[in-house]
Amino acid sequence: MIDVCGTEGGVPEKKTVKGMVFDIKRYSIHDGPGIRTTFFLKGCPLSCWWCHNPEGISPGPVLIRHPGRCIGCGKCVSVCPTGAWSLGENGSLRYDRAACILCRKCAAACPPVAIEIAGREMTAEEVLKEAKKDIPFFDESGGGVTFSGGEPLLQGEFLIECLKKMKEEEIHTAVDTSGFCNTDTLLRASELADLFLFDVKHIDSGEHELYTGVNNAIILENLESLDEALAARGAGRINMRIPVIPGFNDDRDTLARIAGLALTLKTLSAVNLLPYHSAAESKYNNLGMEYKMGKTVKPPEEKMNEAKEIFLSLGIEAVIGG
Ligand code: SF4
Ligand code: SF4
Image 1 (cartoon, rainbow, N blue to C red):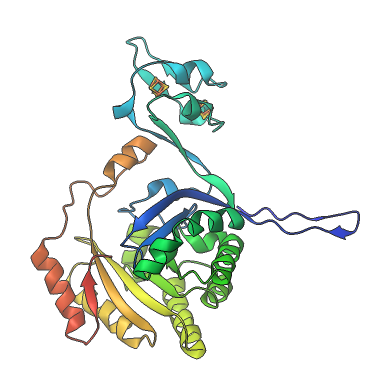
Image 2 (image 1 turned 90 degrees about the horizontal axis):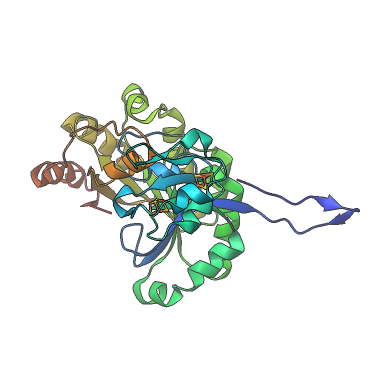
């Protein structure tokens, strides 16, 4: 979401770019080097079956229920202006997403925080203020700020503004991207960010589309363009991140083809092999979304080691995990 103030009476006003952020995670050790503060930006053009942050897919705010926390006080029903919350005949609480206007009144009134609205507007200045609280941890650990999502480059102007602010304060930055984004925006970000955590999910475009909703042509083109730009500048690196998903990309041939792609990159610093897990399944229920992975289980350690070996055998530094 971009809100750019215009001019009034011929006097140019200072531009204010706002973004939609759905979470801030502090003390993260999986989103780049050192201890990091990760800002999760809303909106993603992909719909990966295994997405860990389904609350970040839609561009606007979304209401999340936590039924296990509910104490049945009924405050949500009494404050809701549209009747989106109601009590059934047996006293069970019902939520009608279609009737909800996301006014946030129920979330504010709910004593045990059983209702959450994911997504709030922030300015880049506010993001910087939050990040600066953690500078002692960044300095101690070689950490910094990571922008994730969602797809952070979807809110391009906001992301660029945030990256500029961090650079002014000499805070290390990483951008965690699906690569499915506007190439110009990506290249502008490449002039500011220190590291890109670039997801590669599959080489085959048809398979990619089946499980993520989009084909991978633009992603692979963007990866090449980003690599060229970083190499030309002599600054900035790429970590390739591969979610290892059973039945999708965990076979030897697919991983070998991805490793072949990694080998072509001039600015590759590492490959992260991220084993699938189903920890986000409950989020789908709480959001009223379908979890398509069914009973898929985490790949065994042996399988992950085999995957890692494919990369190591080509001289590519690969690690299991973030
Ligand atoms: S966010 Fe507002 S409209 Fe939506 S359920 Fe809560 S009180 Fe009702
Ligand atoms: S306000 Fe919260 S705790 Fe009370 S009934 Fe509604 S969801 Fe449950």
